[in-house]
Length: 154
View: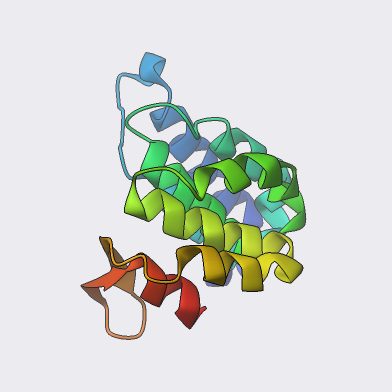
């Protein structure tokens, strides 16, 4: 996305529009991984975050996108925290949700939005051995980790 945006940012913008539309039930094309794809694109092309992050985040409590939107917000916040900073109060709540992926990615996003919270998030999630799977960019594999390991590694 970053390479494409350097030559044709409008093409990347159009891809994001299509992903967002595919998250709309009216599209007839509900693509469950669309939030993840949008989050990856926005982390690679943060200049588009102001335009699209609010739209992607608006699906944060809509099944089947809940976990994917939390992962997307985490990726977006890591590259451009300001467009998703308004989610901080919700993310504080989400760090206590029962789903391991939501806890972990909410903590990562919150830590990117406000780094002063990182020590308290690490304390809160220390010993959280709930398992989750994620894509390891360095190996290209899906790996299993725990909430604690993911939050402490960041």
